[in-house]
Image (tube, rainbow, N blue to C red; front, side, top):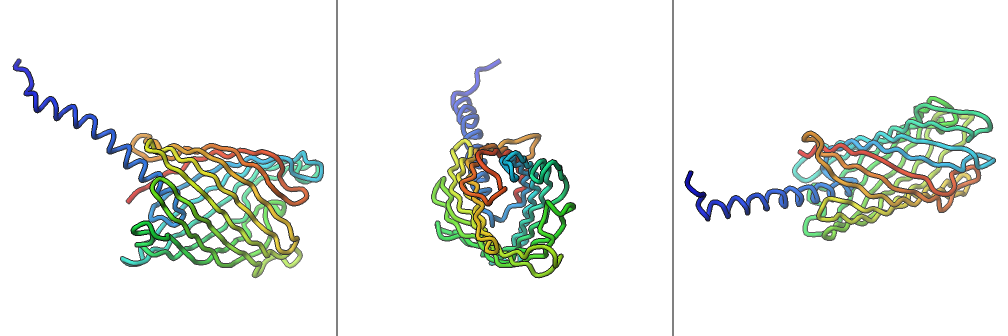
Length: 268
């Protein structure tokens, strides 16, 4: 058998080196796109949060599974409509004395109008719209019993491997059980992410909520690490991290909790 031509052999070696590098670069770009809450990217995040220190005696525990489909619709060449839904499934014990509750919580539906070309040239990426809370809780202890609505917005910048910005909404009650407390709550989520060339994402964020009726804060601070992988051709981001409750109302979570999650990505 004749020896391979040196030029062909060199090309084969170069191609073998370039293809993995190109795939890694594509994964890093996709991982960074995922840090944008109003990106034109179909995804299905499934997130599990565990918190403790709840209840009057600080012995309560709560596990919340958030199913959070994100679906963008291209309205035109200039505008996208981004649908973000949070469907919570909750298990808790001893949050109320000597009792357990489990079931669905209140669904939060947000819709953002966002320019399709936002962020071009390193500029500001933004989206604005409306958020709606649905009283879907299967137990009074797991929801507000109120229909809620209000404005929502997101703004961020991407600077090389870094993403930084914030997500905001404010909800007022507009109907529901008249015997339940009114809802008047602001939520702001500042975030900062770094994506490595190996498609590993490091994120620090806070999820600060202020209850204007009770005049109290709830502020968990989250530190997470995520890795983008390919499982049978399906792009998946695997996430894990810790959360620290910097502030919470009486009977709210305390100390350190944890977060794990999986996000299924469907690039178009």
